[in-house]
Length: 389
Image 1 (tube, one colour):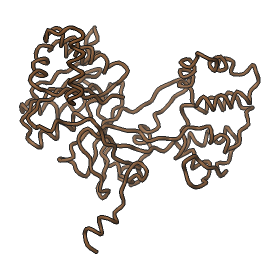
Image 2 (cartoon, helix red, strand yellow):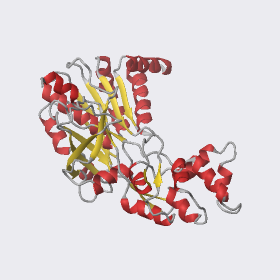
Image 3 (cartoon, one colour):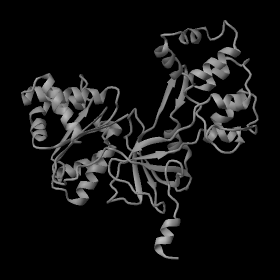
Image 4 (cartoon, one colour):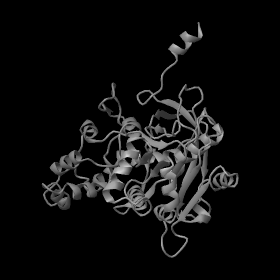
């Protein structure tokens, strides 16, 4: 068989046909005393034929916690052997397998709540009934976000469900996307990830992020059982290796910028590098401290602006550091620098954007409309890119 024929027969791995990868490293990044659990994972993709570029993400299909699944089954008086058909899955499968691998146990849908209320007495879930009234969508979403299916199953044990009926009302267990934290030039057969492990409380219960605790608690190292695919992104380095880059990535937002820096260092890019990073405490939450400090010492990172919000009386964030360096930042932009931001979409990205507009007005002499036009043009030319979630 020729090499060309062999390559044609090699399977193509993607979202619909994920590759069974191995996690070969699971390392805590925070130091003792931190309130956070941020992990560095290494995913082995050798033999998959998968390629990635800086700025891409990896998609991971998680598996639900088996103990949690058994709790759901026992609460509903199901054996788990009942055969069900999950939408968009070609074959019937046992309910236990569907709950483990195909269905989300969190995020109850409006359709589920409506079906549950039809099985309840009028004096049950009175609060929820109000949220189904017109004009209450926001309150309904907040109510459902605080609950998982098990809450309703336990609160209304009188409700009787047929297995297939319940499956038809449940959301699919979807893959989670994580920004890749490694350079493909330096690590062609590995994907590095920077992941905050999600554990929290709502409605008086301990909750766990499905995929983050799957990777941390349930995946055995070096076991080729983690379904993954590569998700291409609009987020990426400039083609011109001589261009300067400004990167704003607090917390796990550092991930793609670690990849950017590794790539530019490996390729000997001539452009300058400026990184804004922040977290809670320098002593416990300075992610990849040794690498970043080494790059700065070598002169590869020209500017390393750090914001540790809880290390002083008043909270200091990355946008404050940007404003402190506003004149220099504006000079970099005017010289053709690319500006990137990665991380929290709810607050951080908006605060960073506001700081940028303020800098353009204070140091660029632009009015509000001029600043808006300036950054609109930067986005069009791909010199202002955001990877927010």
